[in-house]
Image (cartoon, rainbow, N blue to C red):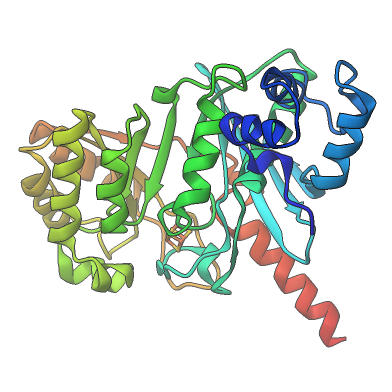
Length: 352
Ligand code: SF4
């Protein structure tokens, strides 16, 4: 199979044109066609010679994301289920905020991390996405927004998969997204979320970027976190916190902690206080996320009073805490639910 053109950042494209006896600026022209003019074929790159277009066509493919389903929520959230070139499907979400349009991308087909409240992990990890397959999700979203003259203003890597288990592809994706000659998304408007893959938190801290890091913490201590997130047995709570301290030391950037509230499990006052004790000496922001009901799991939703009580305790301890506005609640927008439903339908069909 031919590599995807979206897998190449500008430097890699420049290398390729050089090796093929073309002037370096041809790479810039190709990049411009892909990300600024957003064409879908080499044929359309009319300022390139015919022979170069044919060479590109012979060596590279465009990622084709086949829209299997698209759901539009009343709040403007659009959720796509895209089919890849093989039998797999992935989810991508566009969220409308008053400050712009945000795209939530997926980095892996499925996930092996096994968080007990998450539908994405139910069938395990199928495969990593290439950088180009992650890029294509944003390009598709941008093409959709082009119709209304709008643009992607921020990106969150919070879809299915653990980006730090697909580290190189994720970093290539990020370099393409922030390039000023491409989509030119501001680095401070991009957030990578990890479940706590400690060695790659250190690695990410050493990358020279302004990209935000969010950590899915979901519990205030080692014991409860191991119950909710098996990855905590590999990278224990204290090691995760130590790696985040290193990240802060290197970058000076505030840390975002994602905390999924699960009724009666991790949402009580003592949990909030324990979390506050860990975070109050750190520059932290906590996003509280009431979990959507995942039918395959036994968890119940947190009551409204427990959500507000949790937030109050954090705030009283000087920690900035927000309750994430639920988006796309009416279209199963929680991570992995659409794909899980799609997989189930496929299995039912095969069993008939
Ligand atoms: S929450 Fe994220 S890391 Fe955890 S299983 Fe789901 S996709 Fe994987």
